[in-house]
Image (cartoon, rainbow, N blue to C red; front, side, top):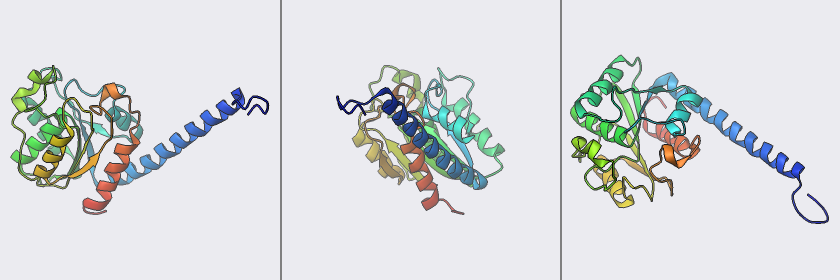
Length: 223
């Protein structure tokens, strides 16, 4: 601090940046340890939505930082329920441990549809982020995913959590709470984070990671 002007000096700013970077690094280290523990009991499977999850997406950050597995589809731009369902079925059947589904947007819709249509003994739980509200959204890309309607309305057969934003163009806050009620899912407000996707630059999205870890500890067996 410059004692005459009261302004921060370059040294002050550098020290603050280092402290912030250390804080973020420490947080990532703690979360990585939590995810390592989760992987001892479960197979966390990232389930992306339309167009896949780009380099700035929290799913991509989690894949890299925590060593998670991503579900791949043959066509991310023109999805069909049958093909996407088959890919998810194959991934779940190949998993060596009970699967923890970590899904975003259309991936969350795919997850709820799959859980409503299949035997679920190999699935431990589902963490749904910003499910695309196919039946109500006016998003310009909505036509690409109309075939995934309607959204299930019955309770999820496995422990489920749902996180949603207050300003998501794909899902209103009111509808998010209605869907959580239908699915008997724990609801967490994600704040003003848009569609919680690639365009929202959430970095590691520690809020979501901490919410997932808490959900696993409280609701899934063996924890």
